[in-house]
Length: 119
Image (tube, rainbow, N blue to C red; front, side, top):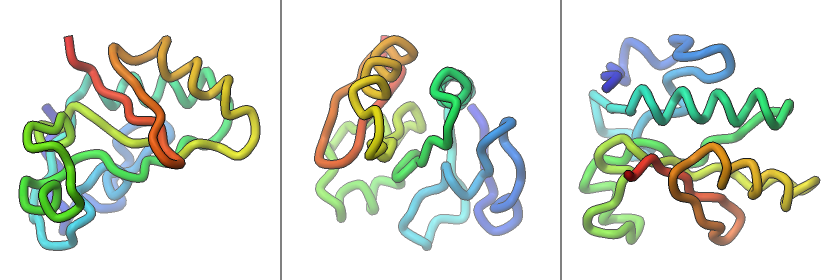
């Protein structure tokens, strides 16, 4: 697991295409966020296959933020093993197909594709 200090690491480059602030809890109150190495690696693989920007709308969520937004009680976001990715306007079907190939589990929501690394 990668531990992100939200106050100090916000602009730290976590991989070739992603910075820490893209992976942090969006509540604005957390001092620490966690993210699975495997999840970050797979998001990077998706970015390279896609060949365009991948926008992470939600990655790590603290329990309080997860509850506030109506997330499932045992959400994979809370353990740092899931992310929601903005569905692109162009070539949406190809993006969804790539998500399903790169990740163990994915589904399409309202404007996003949820991806996680459950086994």
